Every structure is written in structure tokens, then in C-alpha cells.
Length: 233
Ligand SMILES: Nc1ncnc2c1ncn2[C@@H]1O[C@H](COP(=O)(O)OP(=O)(O)OP(=O)(O)O)[C@@H](O)[C@H]1O
Ligand SMILES: [Mg+2]
Image 1 (cartoon, rainbow, N blue to C red):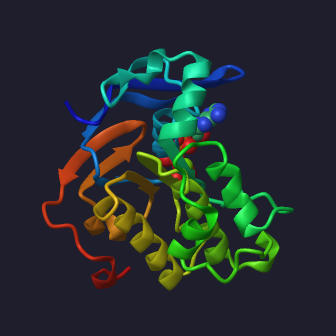
Image 2: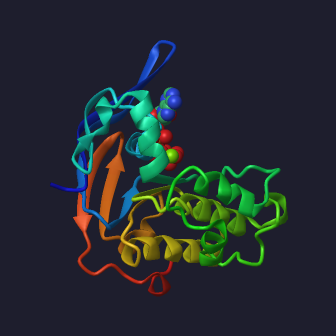
């Protein structure tokens, strides 16, 4: 059995009299330790998939199997435990706490689990060992995104979910951030899922899931994912 499986998962949102079918019969499987890219244009349903996988939202029907357990049946308490111990989330716009330093932002996450990395080590790993005592406003966008990644990985999560992690970054900083995420999968063995609309980065993934209009259109497996240094966009 695959490590992560979505089986016939559907989700719709109602606002007033309109209903949006954000996810329609989503099916895919992901193996442990893979780097996966979910690709699709705006409104395709990518964030909806990611939020459901991360236990931040729930589907209407279908199964969401994580390591053999169906989290779509979880109570909100079970989901909180799952989010806390198993999942690291990197948001598009960093979501750092502005009146806490970089180190304190990472501590927020590392303090809630046992066997966490030290905030210092997590920040050193993303190249911010010298900036630990800076507040978010004193850091560039790319540096803030790296703090957000340090915060997500400090918990040593089994699953790292990243929603447009390079969306707000320049080309080279984006590459740096992707390298950190690819290393988390290929070196540390975490299962990393990146949502993006940028098809040019697909060759770095072990698996590419293409979405359109709330549905999965294709799934490709890359036997030889490319190095980030070797791709251009
Ligand atoms: N909380 C919500 N309430 C109402 N509609 C929603 C909600 N969340 C998402 N939607 C709708 O569901 C559809 C899929 O949204 P989703 O955020 O998953 O797309 P996406 O692929 O992540 O797009 P983007 O690339 O723009 O972030 C969209 O039409 C969106 O408007
Ligand atoms: Mg989105």
C-alpha cells in the first residue's frame, strides 16, 4: 500500500447560492520519501488537496489514507494530533509572527513536539544561522520563506506540504528554497509535496500530479528527477 492515497475524494464549497466543486473524484498515490509536485492553473483545486492532506480542511466524501489510516474519518482532536506530529506546512506568504524573532518563530513549532530539531540547527540548515535574532521585517522575502521552511522542518515531520513555496521569490532564491525541499526528501527521507503553477520545475520531482478544473488530469513518475541546478525557467 502506498504511503499516501486519495481515493475518490470530493470537496465543494458553498457560498450563498453558488457551489464550487473544488475537488472532484481525486485519485492518486504517493510513496514514502517522494518529492511530489502538484501542478495546475489558478483555481484547479491544488490548495484544496493540500489542505485536506494536511488535516487543515476535510473532504465531503472519499478516503484520505496516510500510512494506512483514513484521516477523513478522524475527529477534530485526532486531526489536531496528526497536524501537530506528522505534518509540516509551508505557506505561500510565510505566515511568520511579526513580533517574534526568526528563532522564536521556529521555537513555536519545535516546542510542541518531542524529538524536534533545535531551532538553531533548523535555521542553520536553511542558511540563516547568522540571522536568528532578526525579526521578520528585518529579513528579505526569501529569508522569511526560509524561516518558514525551518519552522516546518524543525518538527521533523514525516510529511512536508508546501503551497507555492517559491511564489513570492526571485529566480535564484526560488532555486535555493527548492533545493532545501528536494534535500528534505532525497537526503532525509521526508515525503514532500509542493503545489505550484510553474510547470518548468516539474522535472525535479519524483512524481508530477497535474490538475485542472478540480480533477486529476495525469500522473507521471520521473525515474530520473533532475538536479535543481540543471533546470532553468
Ligand atoms: N473556502 C472557500 N470557500 C469558497 N470557495 C473556495 C474556498 N476555497 C477554495 N474555493 C474555490 O475552490 C476552487 C479551488 O480552489 P483552490 O484554492 O484549491 O485552487 P488552487 O488550484 O489552489 O488555485 P491557486 O493557484 O489560485 O491558489 C476555486 O474555484 C476556489 O474559488
Ligand atoms: Mg492555491
